Image (tube, rainbow, N blue to C red; front, top):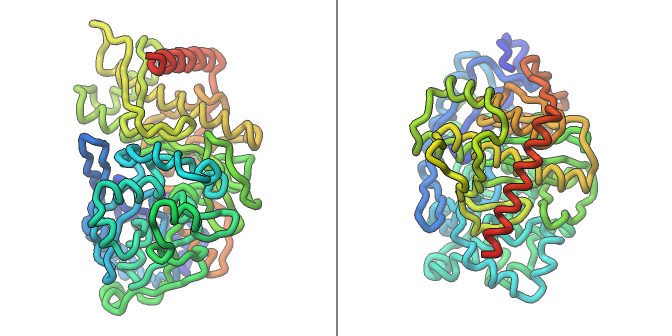
Length: 496
């Protein structure tokens, strides 16, 4: 919801930055956490993929895009005579880069989508004590997490691995470039697979097993324990931001829960952006998740239980690059009118590997059942229905731990842009879905964290354009049949 506010209404003013996989965004918010009209700055980011499963990002391109966004934010704030009090950062989990002693990058950003570390998973699982690691870290042994990434780099690029002074997340790199120093929030650390969540410290056993020292990682803080300011050069460049305090970056999924008002087990957050996830936040002591799920943090007192898909909006992007499709509006209308499963296909939609609930980084995409009658829209329908079914598997696992929610709140660019896909997900899960019109829940969450830092507490603004979707009983039955067909096919492939 965009609200045009007067200068009196928007003071104090807060800045939120959200670093995603496909873009970086910045926006100004007023003291009630309403976005200030026309204050969104966004720059696209690109992911470099390789045939062997690589998925990397250029750290300097990331910083260039960030600086461009903040140049625009400074102009907007100056034109409205606003002074920004605090800034919060939301950033992608499960990604890392190596820097030297001067803070210069020695590696690309190796993202959550990179499946090359799958080659060392068997070695990790064979290490003494590894069966207990997930219970302490909340993260399964999987190629998306840092134990596999770091061990893989040791094996594949030992000289580069040894030359790195510190391994950091993209969120840490952002705050280092802006403020001249770095710290890793408990939120960001909880998505690495290296944080002992029972002790709130780096896990010495895992680090020793993969040949790492804790001093090659950043100091751990809660997001609001280390408040920083821009470097002198940047304060001169951006006068409107000169007095703002900055905090350590938090995980984008945690920020999305906060920004969508999903802060207890009665309301879950479902995000469909480049990837996908369902998360439930609890203000409770850390408890190990079941094997199919993970548990991360927002801060010391708030945890998140959930599951993630590696394939979401990136699957639709792949379709658009590789198929001749109708125009977006025509495609959306066609998808909304089709009966589920009418394509007759089984689509294993694992183009970027597989996370919850099976945690198979070696999984790859497969389409079964093609005929001469199959068309491009059949492929799209089968692929996005497969994503919907995968959400249902994750939801089932979460229900087994915390029970059924009153509502699931859905957001993210891919969900907002496709009501047909949103309805498929609702029907597959079999629970009501509040489809919001705001694709920027992570941004709002980062703004709320900035406000918390300044001692300001506010409710998440309501979204009058949100639509409540209800599952259709007949379509639920069809989706269950489609899920059974998928799982039978997967079992057959495994037997082969």
